[in-house]
Length: 112
Image (cartoon, rainbow, N blue to C red; front, side, top):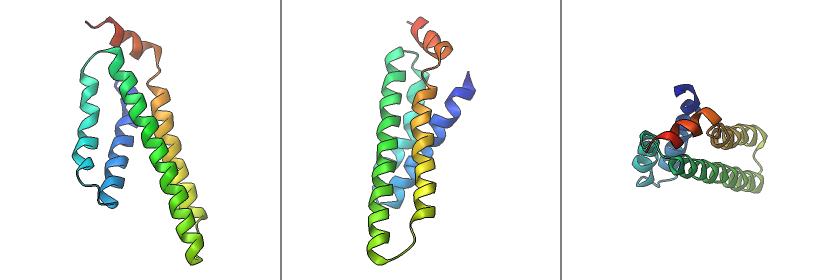
């Protein structure tokens, strides 16, 4: 079951790196600590983490579009950057989907 959490945790680390890069340093520790809520065995925790990952995916898509506009404006190539950020956004969104695993949801539902 631990394998299910690998991509969601990696997604959190990548988001923390992004926040650090854009000088939102106060979000870095929150983003790095967020995976620890998974120790709380409640189904709603999984839902909160999924919402968090979906928001993270949207942040990556917004960043991709912003940087694409910036690079086009200064005449730089943007395709490699778009592919990389698109893959990161996809991984983050797929991480939310991975948490929809039936075994995981049953394990989090059965805990009281």
